[in-house]
Image (cartoon, rainbow, N blue to C red; front, side):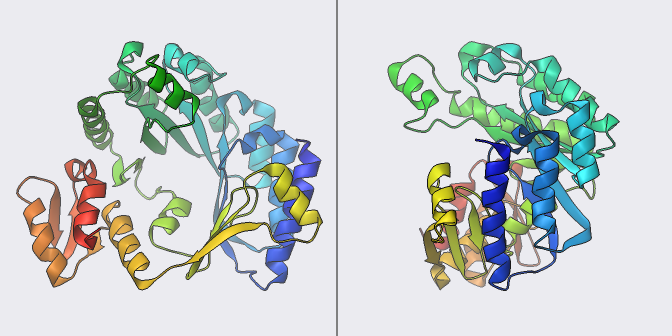
Length: 339
């Protein structure tokens, strides 16, 4: 995919959005959902410029770029910083080379650490690291060591995700054939709780089920999702929400581009949120953050049963899950919504 070709199509879509009257000042800008760092130094700068030409960006806006470690070169990092990127989310995934090889990642553990240092040298002061836990037991990966190496790099933010096996993916096929076995459920819980304890001990706030941050450095962009704020998405598979309707674009790049240049709608499907949908989302999104969920009297009667087992705290009618509660997030949320 030529960079200029992609940016041209992106400009067309954003031009449509702006022409429809949605030119709100942006408080956050997030380039992700794929490998935007593959656009290179100039490509990312041009992508930021495309957005700026159609929308006003707040002076203190959070501008995040997701990056692969191998793409974080001194030239690229400086160009991104000059373009306005002030937050870098680096997909390191692990500091164990055997795990990276198993995941078919092209960077090494040392390259992951080096990427953080390159970002620092380019004056990008807000760096987030992504790590994966609960990998197959046969890899003999030390999760504690991965966390320790991450902390040594002194990031402002960490996102920690448990490995999931989905049908139809290479990992799903490997598991079905018996080539790999996903980490055991008790191992998942043990690693999640270890991360919670170590991050809190290092001064991080576990502000959302998968996210940790230094004081005042929560991801403003992702936090907006969890409060139900409207957002605009552009590009293949991008999702948007205007406060009432959620929509998502077609996924294939060629189809997305073809529709744009033919003057056709790139939205594949949309849904209007019902009152029941909103209630269920309010419960789930509230429970997944430390802000918690402001519960009704009926819901409080249910949630009180979670306090003694150590799954939740209740204060002034607000239910906040503990780390142990977050391990049961789906079932607890369903308990309040009756689904």
